[in-house]
Image 1: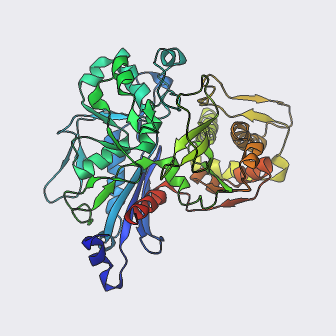
Image 2: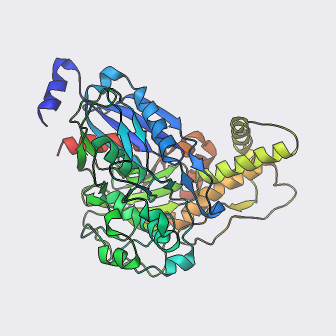
Image 3: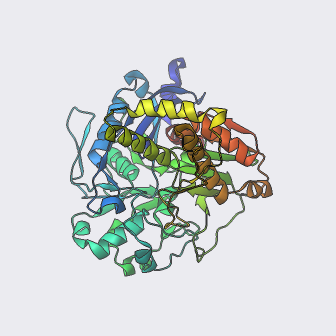
Length: 476
């Protein structure tokens, strides 16, 4: 494992790893003991990083310096003495999105300082960005990959800029996810190094040959220098050239990973288990047999189930819904706005507390049905949200809340039904994610819809999973 690891094991104190997750709404980091795999310390902070898009509701972008400032604040609050024992860093983040930067001028670590200043970067265009209409996507070439391309995917977003705002691309010469950028910054890399997780989530990447569809992308107008180098998930991207908040110089940093795969990694112990994660969005997945090999081309029409690369050459069968905690958050914002319109100012925390109390009452069940697809779905992007079976008796706040929670689970069940789980030998479900952990109504509806044992596991956390991936990398 190397002399550095051995030295830090001396004195009866175990080495540890740092795990980082850059999520859609928050950042989190944790220190994990390499032997016990227990969390030693963790920090989390909301980023409040959304910025208005020039495209209105069709765009979704975030301020990169604000996100990385929040992350560095979290890291700075971890115990410095423990940080000195970090032997590897694992990083993951929200999949599909992209940002651009200029090599040589995108960041600066001032002398005698841990903190990086971020300059010369674009906004981060998130997985929720919908600037790539179905008409635009139809103009793109067919990928040489089993995964179809949707709006919000990195390559699709970059091709949109190439065709509609080419002046944006001329300002930069590097691109990656925001967690790729973080790794690049930490290791002072000239060229970003991306894991297969993130490359697959960008589109136009063949997970079997482990290569970009370069000819296809360049032919469609994407500058080749914007394509990151790709390595197997779990491999190192580089090393820290300088100490960072106590972590010694020379510490290896993994190429950044997908947050879905990292949230699943600590939970998926048996092939008879499926994992559900409900945070901003929602995913239900299970591991395919080790000999599974994906098709050579995407399906002619988008399917509700896709096959994402996992670790060690394996794949996950995934129903990835765009509607999870974000649909509930939109409902809370609406209730808050109605209150303001009536002349009352109610904090969102109070609204959350009250609707979960009302919706959790057994009398909140009703015939009201809510289709929660406020953000569409990749397999049916034009679908809107709707409510049916409305009557005078089922429009109370509690019953609407209950119907919305049920709708989120019902929508996911329509994508990956119980029968499919049974066909693949799944006998139980492990649950994780902030929305599922905080909302007992979702858990009740999940158990009712799938009629399978469901157990919550707090280890279903992407930051913790990135730390576990770092530990696993050390043991190979």
